[in-house]
Length: 158
Image 1 (cartoon, helix red, strand yellow):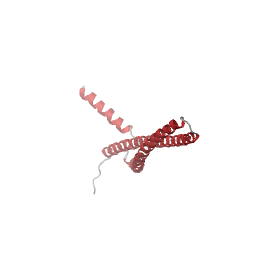
Image 2: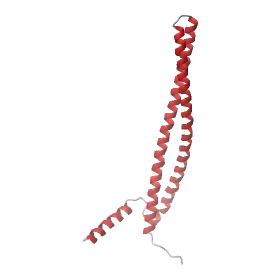
Image 3: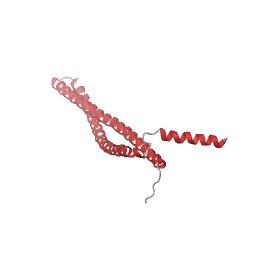
Image 4: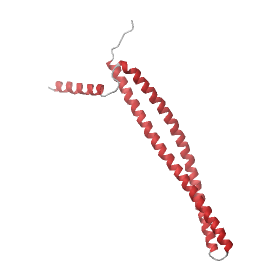
């Protein structure tokens, strides 16, 4: 009884593996190889894009840090100038206005730099996800290739 159940289980498993795949016969190996090569090329291109994105992310990150520091210093300077302007002279008020505008511009630049950095981080996550999908498909194709090899009769050279 156990043997019958075991044989049935083995049969169901074997047919599921064989019929659950796109490429099943030795004639399908050309199509499988074409898809495999395409996936390898795509993965190589994605990895190249990923390394570029990671380099850009490092640049954007340092740029954002620098601009955030500059914006903070500019805001402090503007605040100090505004304190002077409250004590009297029109000339001090004009300087305070100019420094406030400069601080605002610096803050906008820092915000834009942070946005670039966040966009690059999203791009990296997207590329990692795509590479993962491609590698998973390559693994599936390898399994299909092995299944075809096991099913194909071995032909001895004559």
